[in-house]
Amino acid sequence: MAKLLLWVVVIIAALLVTRMLTHKKAQPVRPSRAPKAAAPKGAEQMVRCAHCGIYLPRSEALMSNDHTWCSLDHAKLGPRH
Picture 1 (tube, rainbow, N blue to C red):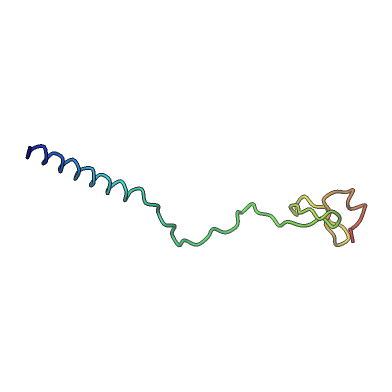
Picture 2 (picture 1 turned 90 degrees about the vertical axis):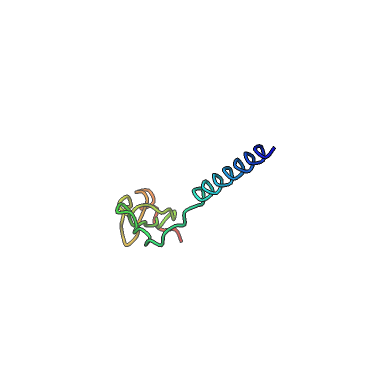
C-alpha cells in the first residue's frame, strides 16, 4: 500500500511541475515600448475631388483652376456648391 501511495504522489508532482512549466511558456508576451514605425515609403498624399468629394491619390488626380478632380467629366461639370 505504501508503494502505491508513493507512486500516486510522484505522478501528481510530475503533473504539477509539467503544468507549471507549460503555463509559463503560454503566457502572452507584452509588447515592447519600441517607437512606432513611420508611414510606409509608398504612402502618398490623398486629395479630394471638388465635384463628388471622393478621395484619391494625388498622382491620379487632375488639377485645374486650383481644384482637384477625379475625372475629366467632373472637371467639366465644375465644383459642387
